[in-house]
Image (tube, rainbow, N blue to C red; front, top):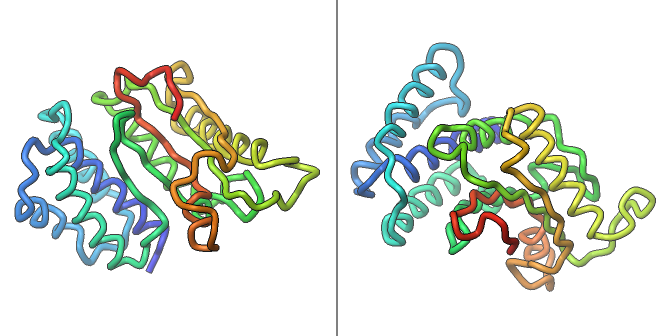
Length: 228
């Protein structure tokens, strides 16, 4: 199994559903997703072109947003797919009052204690860039936010504290999106929050792993100029 390829495909499929369906009928969504079962993860050649064409056609009829109930149906389906591909805990997509949050765990993007993006993670961020550049979202502000656990940093000569590490990671993701994916730099910002915005208590290795993440937030109108 190509874990990174499967992860990218899951991310693309989820966003197609999240933004393009006005009614989240579970049977209809599962039928759509069945078309991707048995694939190798990343579509290539003509199949990828056809997939991108289908995405564009679906997004032409996109609605402003989904209800909490509809989003819950989509998240349940995504979770089933994530579990089936043994990707649990590596990616999550949630929504709150700020907007849509794509959370990528640090282990799929970075080596421990470092901020350079792994080569094999490039495709994941490229696909996020494709989503951010779609007509429906290209005018939305985006915040890239780095988060750490509360362990001391490994390489103090490079990153004296978790402030520097989390900020460097967010900045590198931002630079990739701007320089490699052509996201408009005017609409995107980066910030590091060290370990001060955890999503779980920093009391076990498992919880600390949850807190080490990079969030890519597609901001709603009311939160374009705010942080967490």
